[in-house]
Image 1: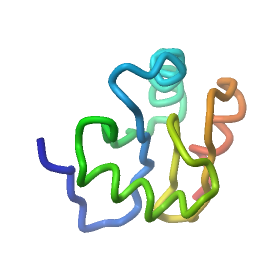
Image 2: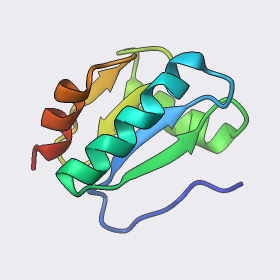
Image 3: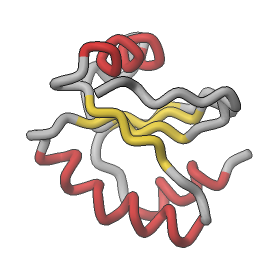
Image 4: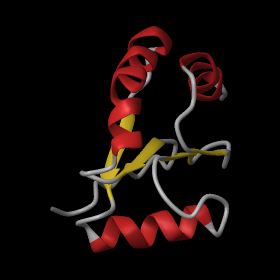
Length: 95
């Protein structure tokens, strides 16, 4: 499956692995944040999609080294690992 493209480059990206238990833990939190902050995450699977894995490496640049990994294309801010709802909500609301 190809990587989702966006000309705006203002996406909130969520890099995940299909079998990643930490990523699955983040799913309901992600849904909650999308509803409360009125944002949408672009979800990019990296364990079975080489193009997405390369994009992850570009944005991660040694910061996290795995998934779950969040990247804000507008602010260039990164978060890695399982994080609580409040922290992800605050991060997602930054402009």
